[in-house]
Amino acid sequence: MQGVHKMWSAAIVFGLALAFILIPQPASSGSLQANAPRSQADDPVPAFHAQAPKGDLPATMSPELFSNPFVQNAYAVAAKVKKTLYQQPCYCHCDRSNGHSSLLDCFTSAHGSECGTCIYEDLYSYEQARKGKTAAQIREGIIKGEWKSVDATKYQQPLPAK
Image 1 (spheres, rainbow, N blue to C red):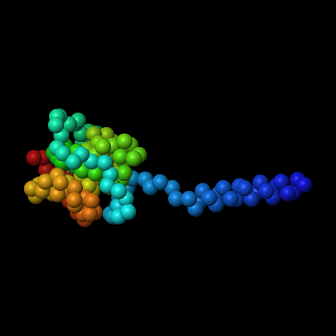
Image 2 (cartoon, helix red, strand yellow):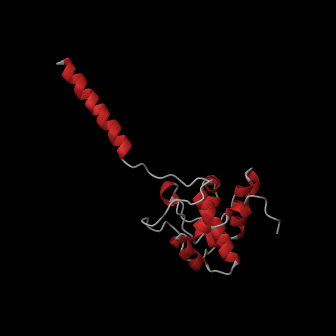
């Protein structure tokens, strides 16, 4: 009888371990080293604001708080395009995990410093805004995944002060 209990216990433990391995775990944010952050093809569009802000926006974190030049540059450009970032979704889905309401929230906190998806979308938004694109046009590009094509090598060294 004791052998039957041991067998059932072992079967239950094995079943739980197998279920843990086979059940998909929630995806985490993209890493800073990711060259091609994950696809959003089947994901709904994350949270964003469809209109420009009515009042002042919160400050982004100071680039000097970070030692990595790539991260410093991401925060520096985020400060320059806050109104644009306010109107952009973030495909790391921090709206679900962190309660963010737009891409701007990633850079008013330290979250953006640890997430390749946030940084690539930020750099894409900055480059497109400098080309004269509207926030809505930039959002269309982000939704299509165009942010994945950003050449991050030009942001590895400190940017010239402007």
